[in-house]
Length: 215
Image 1 (tube, rainbow, N blue to C red):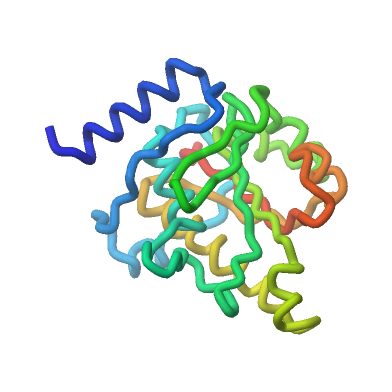
Image 2 (cartoon, rainbow, N blue to C red):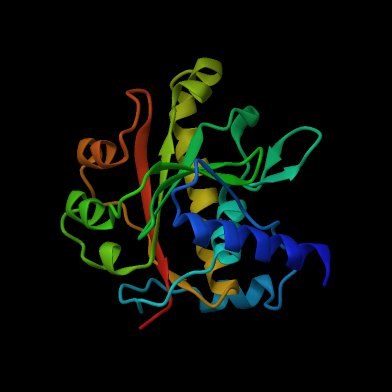
């Protein structure tokens, strides 16, 4: 058994045994080579709003997190999505049946924030878009604008929005590569989503992405 498979099995076992209630969850190491070409992923990507209840496995979840915000160069800490001045204003949250989690790129782990299913609450905060609750997984990308605006001033707001687009597109294309589907969601009440995620005052939700198997 190779080392990567062993780590996948170990991380999956730990997650299942604790039911997502661990303080920190080790994600399987990301793959850097897939079976589908980038061109095929671009051609096949579509917005999907109906999902099966089929579970997304931990290695798939880890791959999606890595595609959005994972470290791709250890020495300088560069991430998968380009960032103006490497200021990295984004944070990534995961909502699934097991609870609410925060992705930590530096350790490729998920930190458990809440041990309750908040997808229905997130859907309600997003104008009642029920497919958010139906999807087995939902990402919320948030931004701490000050990380970028302290260097670039008001122009930094634009740079943050550009970066959100980069990270989100990585999720959408990675989902296709994994045989999954997704949809971009921008219609939601910021304050209500912030309440669902218990975000600090300086953090603003900017993008929701449900992910799952197409029904």
